[in-house]
Image (cartoon, rainbow, N blue to C red; front, side, top):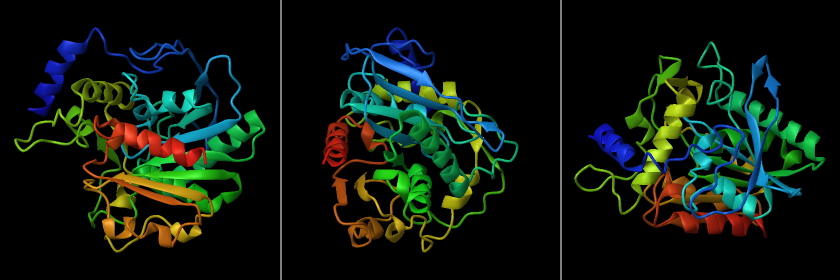
Length: 319
């Protein structure tokens, strides 16, 4: 049923669908007449080419930099759903940031890996550090902001603890603070499907996508980008890290030295809310916790909630 719905939506919107930054040419979304610059930066770590790109308002030279870190299975395209004003990338660019995105090895537009267990959380933290070092080299600015989503909160926090000297502020969006449940992951790659790409969108009582929560165009654009950039499979190292006993903490909150925003919905099936509600006990002074009622794991793409998400992220970063 999910696949059929996505296919029907595809037929309805095919003339308006936009694949964000598939090529260096920039396409202007329906509600945004601003021109953006797009650049890719050659980056390699351990013999694997990593995709790193930067988006900014054209003709500007931002002094603020933020790196967006993707979650499990799907890569950094997820931050630029180029429809109306959903795109987090373009929002931050309009706010005066140079917005950087990195794909962990084996993901998206980065080079393939032979062993899908290799890009685990610690490995991904080193990919993030490689990206940060290049950003510093390019800009001459010693500290940047980082926002991670889902597994990206685990990987970016590994970076934050190990390399605090290069981090200004940290945003942990839908943080996986502890194990999701012990399960033996035996295959080193996850085989992706259209239905899996849409798993994080909320359903109604009948098991269909709740279109009062998520615009069908957003569902289609997100799924299409997953199909385009992430294709048939993605590494399982991160999945093996997450599928451990819930008693195992995955993010070292006391080890984070930067001011941190923890932001999530209160209907996220992946979160340990006992830990979420106590994060400020372990984070530095000036950190914040925002829990948005009714929102789920994909709250940055949910119609009733994404403006609250955007406003809270910008407010925190600009203090």
